[in-house]
Length: 142
Image (cartoon, rainbow, N blue to C red; front, top):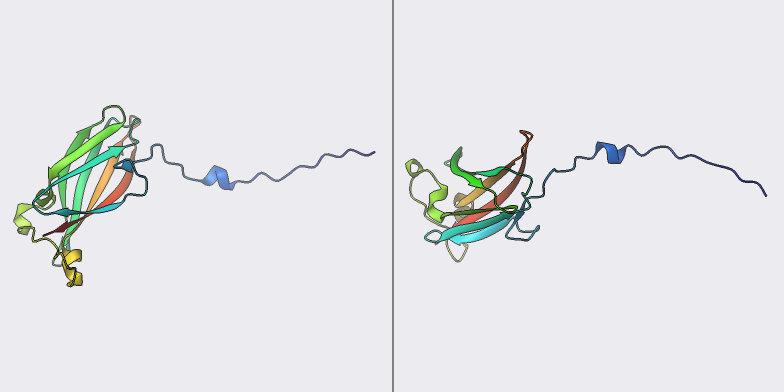
């Protein structure tokens, strides 16, 4: 009986993977990345999985006549790994950019939804000075 030892080449793929320092989750569901909100309602978004973060900064981005715009929605404190964004839905846009109209309920106008789409950039600010980002899309309806 012969016994031999063989070696394997180290797989560098795992060493090169980028692993987030925190996993930002919306409304306790990792798959939730978008939702519709009535333009006259309050947008409430539970941001969890941020226990390593000192705070969470949220920015609303949108387009007006093809021009990219942004509005700072504030910096939220983290308590027990959770931050909660609660703002009037029509506050996702700068007032200088005009009133929020809201997409039609029937969805017959394709541009209506596009013109009422707001991408929320959620940045978890970590103690080492780095940050992790996840995006959430809110569509405002009538």
